[in-house]
Length: 310
Image 1 (cartoon, rainbow, N blue to C red):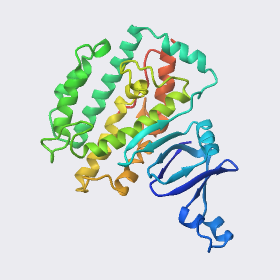
Image 2 (cartoon, rainbow, N blue to C red; image 1 turned 90 degrees about the horizontal axis):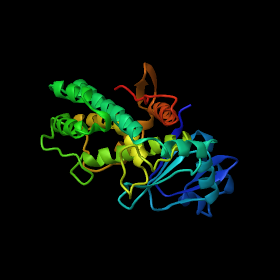
Image 3 (cartoon, one colour; image 1 turned 90 degrees about the vertical axis):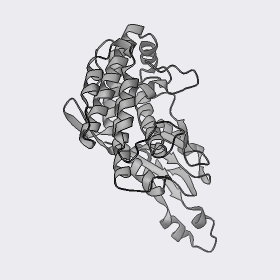
Image 4 (cartoon, rainbow, N blue to C red; image 1 turned 120 degrees about the horizontal axis):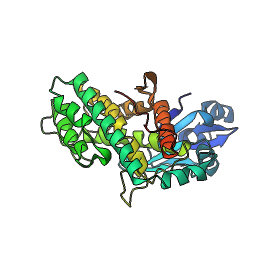
């Protein structure tokens, strides 16, 4: 079953009762003129076992330690947003699998040739999906993209990822001929950044569930990045976010600011349909297949990661 993504963008009291997340509104809870029966009826509850991602996007949200403990025990990812209402932190359980030590050992002891082969598969899948998105949305020549996808070598030593990215971003948004992809660049980069943050949380949560450490990547090695492996694995999934942002831009929506409506749209990313080896599933379920196959590559049971085909 696909887990739910909960977004809180207003003041709220969040607590736990009978394995349920209890949502109270401060203006109701603090109002002494309201009868207790009315306050109880205004509460909203959600089974904690149904929750996959929680986004906390307001400075006046209060939650109990008991609730955080239960969310982590159920392998939910908790995203906290900063004063600018952009994702700033990600909380995950330390242990998400019964054979954690064995799996960490297999991951950490993975050989450099294996990691280079896995990165090769990852970049080929990413370029393939970027190509498919361009072909679906734009009438542009993609022969070079097909070529770059075909000739990626172990470790992508010739950096075909960068060549493909330059061509891809220069052609994806026809109404924005000067578009530059970057965290600090002009909109719709704000939408892409937000969508990638949601995607990263979904991937990191699934890595933990598969008994893997999100910190140790197969390619990303930034010493200040706690989610190197999540950033590796999410690469072929990025075009699904790009497609959603393309649709928002194409429909003429004012995307200069991340409105509540746009955020609600991007929070649907875990439910996007993906296809892996001919089987359709929500993205959150597909990511679980990907991370499970990645561990089996680390353990020597498989040679190929199961990535989606756009």
